[in-house]
Length: 338
Ligand SMILES: NC(=O)c1ccc[n+]([C@@H]2O[C@H](COP(=O)([O-])OP(=O)(O)OC[C@H]3O[C@@H](n4cnc5c(N)ncnc54)[C@H](OP(=O)(O)O)[C@@H]3O)[C@@H](O)[C@H]2O)c1
Image 1: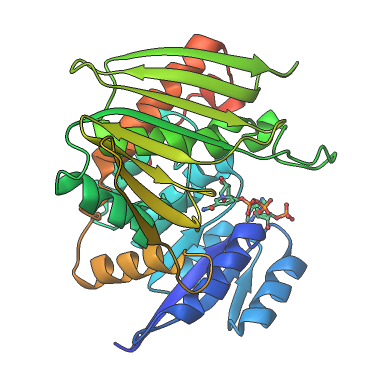
Image 2: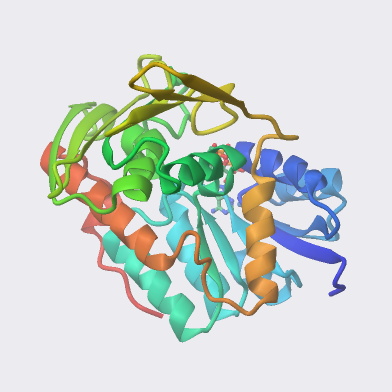
């Protein structure tokens, strides 16, 4: 390991892992590279390793955790596989950046966090939006009182998912459904700005397999604030987020959770300020840099997205699922603590 290089292992070399690998090129001065790849198909792992110039590739999790020789592991499999891969990495003292949602339910997330503490190893949920310059700007504006006390957060996220037979989007075994895939982002924004809600009223449009193709919820807070969140895999909404305060509002323009075109601060008296958003790549490099910083400082978590945030987030997702009847196979299994 050299100070100038940070080496990643990748578990699940699919769509988002490719974007992650591309974004690593935008990090300086530390060079981030891929050193090991795990797929359930050795051929796919080899293809990805070849493309990224990674020396090791595997199709077996146990062999990967023993021989990856990396500084941290990025887990980007479909959601139901996050739990097992994370536990195995942590048991082998491999720091983990685990894609969202970290686990399928609160029990899994709690066990993952407990394992990080037991094995004294870094763990971060891949809520990459938290580290984007756009969200940092919004937090800065709110903290400096630009809109006064936050009273309402409204955010939606949707896309018309392809109904292909192998698609993970509508398959309960692969954690399909709009809430865990997309709705988690609006729920995250509400938690970031207002905290954990005291009440929830939710509605979901369920498929015949008990997962949601669309989901809407109102999150209630004791201080008269509220949040409205919406996600869908069957319609295309505006994909914007608005934060309303006593003195004004902040609009994060479309696509608010990726690279928004702009942030607009409007005071109710009328004046408006526009902040353009621009950075290289998709934006996953910012969370990768955060992992590198924390791991090198021997931290077990990032203070910008700590374990209790992940737990609060999943408890809200669980509560919405409980109200609307969204059920996954993982909810029925009793998992053992390693
Ligand atoms: N941060 C973001 O913006 C973002 C965006 C999209 C997704 N995500 C999250 O990232 C995760 C993956 O999403 P995706 O869209 O990248 O899915 P994807 O394209 O289907 O990729 C998943 C990858 O995991 C592989 N895989 C499946 N089973 C495996 C196993 N047992 N061991 C190792 N690899 C295995 C798949 O291989 P096969 O293709 O051969 O099955 C595929 O390469 C999801 O949890 C999702 O929520 C995050």
